[in-house]
Length: 435
Image 1 (cartoon, rainbow, N blue to C red):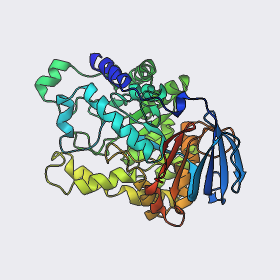
Image 2: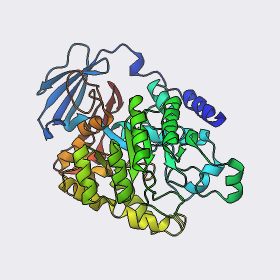
Image 3: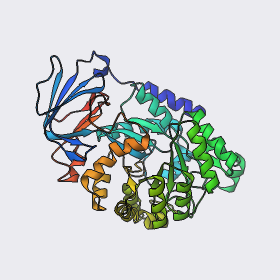
Image 4: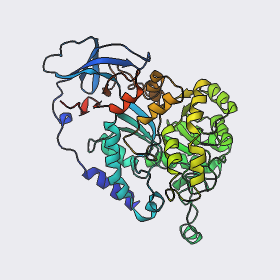
């Protein structure tokens, strides 16, 4: 607890200098060479976007003269669209060969300092919102960003994920017997449950902690210090207890899942989304379509861990075969899910891979067989649906002024998503093209 308070103090100390957000808002007019309509999934030509008080005030066809005193921003060679949302990140860390020892050597304050840079990289890459699915300091990071103390995306934070004993999010995995006996078995407060009552208590603890969303680890995981990456780790009744309790607090539930049986139980239990979904079967896809469950593939993470598994010493021996076997399959699963009509939204699991490179997921989604427009919708309007919000994900009057732009046409070349050079969040410009 002391470390968490210190982490909060660190984030609060990193105050931003005075910016446009502190001055009277005279508004701005963005002259876009093209505009992606995420609701229709198509480009609709040149538009002028008038922004005031953090909201989109007008969306005008063509190049229209800026209102008096408004700041004109020339994006005539660019495609504009709603800011992107990455539904699966971990802003408090980034994979490296020392990751498994850092939890013993570093304090939450160290992770807090790192998270500041990761958050800014993510925002500047065009991701104005993220869903952070498990981290030690991201609840405080969220608050610091909301207070205007540091730069970063809008965060929906899960805080501590919910697991079973030995499950993917059990914080004591890999501890030796002496240390395990010293600390004692973790319980619902630490996010480890073994009964329906435990499941309810864990959700209520997340409410007490200030979480925005609930994450469960419905199966084993790739990077956890445990042998199985796909074994089921909750009963259907436990999942239902989590989902029902989450609804009491207005929460949605995201389920990490690689294995088929655990995935099926999570969908049957009513989760909002399946994350990763490596061994998704026809049976699971059918149930997901029946229940309206979303799929967040995180192809980027799969590609990253499969690549790093080839390097001696990057992962512990217990992790390396899982990374090689499971990581390589996610992209193929995503393609099959798309062809089968499963609803897909955008997520990367960044923190596994390098923050700021989130847009690689667009490229991998298109490689998997999804149209470029579908991939862009997955990170805009579809992501907003997963979050349960209606004030972002589209460029329309009255919505949040989360607007990004990139040179070229991302529908013709999805690689252009890696070239974002204009970022506006809540009407504040954080990045502009070089003049």
